[in-house]
Structures are given as C-alpha cells and as structure tokens.
Image (tube, rainbow, N blue to C red; front, side, top):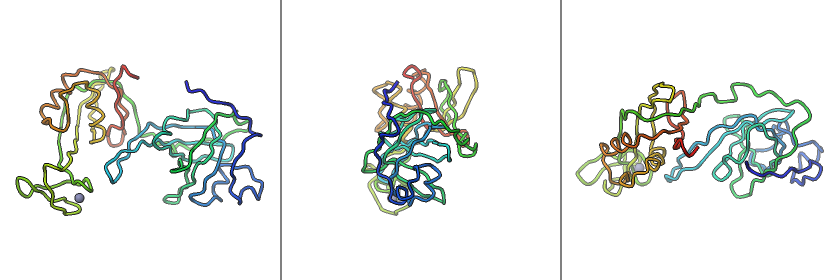
Length: 272
Ligand SMILES: [Zn+2]
C-alpha cells in the first residue's frame, strides 16, 4: 500500500481563485459551478468510484493512459480525469486534498482534470465529518466488467495497413503504393504501419464463454504477455499469431466494456 501523509486541514496552503477567496467560501465541489474553465483549483474530496485505466490513442499514434473517477464532498460530486503518471494514484473510499486540478467544461458538463504543465499534488486527509452527497447511479459507468480466463479460440485476426500520418486505412493501388482513405496521400505500403485487430473467444474459470475484441494498442500489449520472442507483430503472419496465442495456454485478467465487448486492458493472471 502507498504511504500517504495526513495533512491537517488548517495548515493547507492553497492558491484560491480570487473569486472564491473574496467570498471566503470554502472550495467545495458545488462552488466549481462558479469557477471558470481552465482555472486551477484545490479541493478536498472523497473518491467514490474508480474506473479501470484506459488507453486513449492520440492523433500522432501515441497512447495515453487515462482513468476516470467520481469524487464527492458534502456539497456534490464531480468527474475527475487522471492522465498518464497520475493514473492509479488515488484509492477508492479515501479522502484527499488535491492541489492544482484543472476545471474543464465539455458538452455542458464540468469536470476536473490533471494539469498539463503544473504538478498535481495529493495528500490523504481525514474523512469529512459531514455527510457526503450520494453519487447518482448514472454518473457511474457500469459498463465495465472484469473476467479471469483463457483464450480458447481466435475467431478473427486482421492486419490493416494504415496511413503514416493519420492512421486511417490505406487501400493498395499497385503492388507497392496505396492511398489513404482519409487524407488521400499516396504512400509506399512497405513504410506504412500495421494495425492489428483480434476477436477471441475467452473461457472464464467459471466456464462462461465470451466473445471479445481487441484493437491495435491492446494487441501490442497483449503479445508481450505471451512471452514468445518469435511473436513480433512487425513481421509475423496472421496464422502465426493465432498459433502463438493458442499455444501459450496462459490465463489472463481482462477488463472489457460490456456494451461493445471490447477489451480495455489485459494482464497475465499470475502478475495480478
Ligand atoms: Zn492519411
């Protein structure tokens, strides 16, 4: 378990927004409604709900780790998004003093986010004495589930040639060149990245069967778990990949979205 320090509330030094310090109002979740977007704030919150870490692919093809939480205090609850190094830094049911969270607005929803350049700091503090606001069920996405099991069948595997710049599909025009479907740029097929897609049948330890799909970033992580040095996605065929998967006979812990049957994360069972 992570060591955290208990900071007495009275000694917290915070940069309040002028608006809030003027009114000498305590920084509460309810008061976030009056805070402008992009402002940095500090808050005391209890972590009500923690989602699994997801991977978000960016335009330039890199992958960012992202985790959504619901945090609350006696005045309300709000979504908190943790990025990259901050994922898994906060634990459910614990109360923290957060310093430097950024207020964001999207589609009329206000939420808070880890800052890009400033450092987010978090210290565990004592629990609220006042009652906390109950979190409405629809705030909590109940669309994720975790299973433990083996991959017993590979139902579909495909390797798509994608555009160097926008990662959309490239359609071959000749043996050597192809057009990007999106940005139309003609490019050498041999220099284009490949994106993998897998659909597998998972048999859980309770003998339940589930059909789940895995997109490129997830496939890239998954093959490393197979522990087979011949299994290099750069130059193996679809058939070889199927063989390596079935031969491994390993058990995995899989988080997936129940509405799309899409795998969010996959780990070797022993390492959990
Ligand atoms: Zn393109």
